[in-house]
Image (cartoon, rainbow, N blue to C red; front, side, top):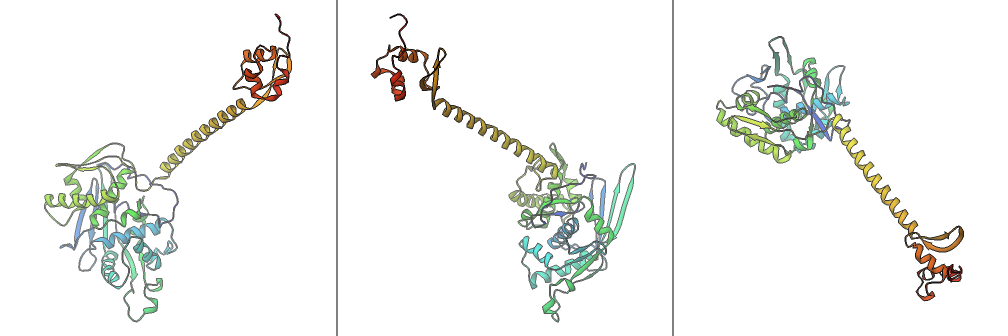
Length: 373
């Protein structure tokens, strides 16, 4: 599949990490297992990209929701230079900030959840990644283990005052893993991720929101390609399609977008991104400023019209034929014929609109000699 975002940084405005986060580019391209795998090694493919995950001396590969949540959290901490990550040693403290992250994603934090998280972290930290990109003209790849050293002491009954504190829970990530997290991560909306229950739904959300950052026209992806990318724990494409559709429905329910599952292809239409990029934000601000400018100009015109109307309705002295201050009247009601009838006395005082407008005009009623009398 063509990947327009492969070499482009998805830059977004600075915001607190509690409002948005990041997930690695690799995690948006290929997937870890969803259920406990029967093998200790799996391979995922996406176009020219091939990623092999291998269990490092443990019972199985990491699977399910928690390894995905950890990677999103770790990627966010690394990307935002959070104090819990030490870039000099690549050490990430699994303390208060990780608890905050889980609570933000509506994951219950306690002994039961930590008992479920702990073995998944052990599997993930010992997992090895082999990432290879093969094209006709170039071959590149990297191999690394996720963590070089780690210490998880959440469940140590001998340390109740320190349970969950950073001093006893940390992981020293490998250089290769940190570089993977830093390599053009995908901005994600944590409020959307919090509403996704299925691990595949998390993967689909990361995948489509990354595609939306560069998608300008509808694209069609074969089911076989998606199966190689996501996998599902089943060897039957028919079952994979059904699982994918169910997870996609969960995503669309909280992140409205147009993704249609056909018989042969999955079609994806351009859509707004979860988190606007800096370029999109600048465009939004420009459009907002333009709207405000138009509104301001409209308001100015309205004020000018109101002022003109007020001025037109306000009385002032009018001069006729070079004679100053002859009639007190307003521009809106000004009538040269009525003014002459007033000054020449042609109009009766009781019917004269000039006299009726202001009593100061009454003493000048008929003050001009009629030229033909």
